[in-house]
Amino acid sequence: MDYSGDFIALDRAGLVALVEEFLSEKRAQHVFRVEETAIELAEKYGESAEKASIAALAHDLCKEMPDDKAMDVIIRENLDLELLEYGNNIWHGPVAAVYLENELSVTDEDILNAVRNHTVGAPKMSLLEQIIFVADYIEPGRNFPGVDEARQLAADNLTKVIDFATYHTLMHLLEKKVKIYPGTIDTYNAWSVEKGS
Ligand code: GDP
Ligand code: FE
Ligand code: FE
Image (cartoon, rainbow, N blue to C red; front, side):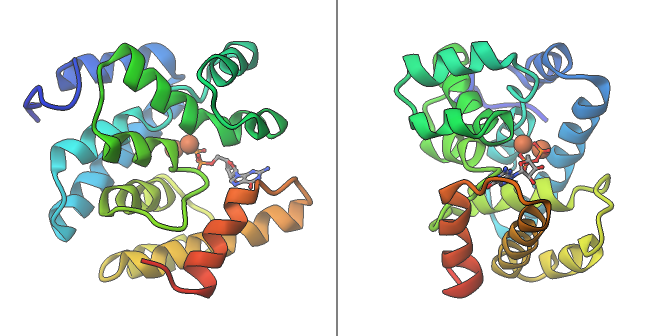
């Protein structure tokens, strides 16, 4: 895909090269499958395929950043300090959004929010945010119980997939008895209880 130059200071090949530089082979392959899925959803639901490609390729860019470096970013950039109590699983989205803004000249809030919120979600999510959240959950390499049902739901309603994903992820986290990030509860309340938008 040719990028317009309106959203990021790299062409697609440059962004792919960054993914390959920053991430293990296995995780890079996950990222490429998320991109494929996100472009399909963008075409189906009427979102920009270019923005879907950029947000998808960038979403896990900081997933393998050393904790001390990520913690420096959180402090220096005045992100929510509560992130520090949770670890990489929770902060890699917000940290990647900072990287895109500072290093790759991304200013589009929709792309930044899609990357920032891809793990925890948010009570209100734009179409692009929903697409990245869902594509990350259903990409063809995912094989957890329930993923086929989620894929079927994605064929006609993103809201239902977000309800499904939020509920099942929270259930899974509770079963593992790990610390729940408050934003995860906010997303659950909005999308699984109040059936958000
Ligand atoms: P990935 O980066 O493609 O592996 O996927 P995500 O960014 O969606 O999720 C990263 C990890 O964070 C997953 O293992 C989730 O289960 C986990 N996670 C999501 N919400 C929470 C939370 O509130 N608390 C904790 N401890 N982990 C969470
Ligand atoms: Fe992630
Ligand atoms: Fe991911």
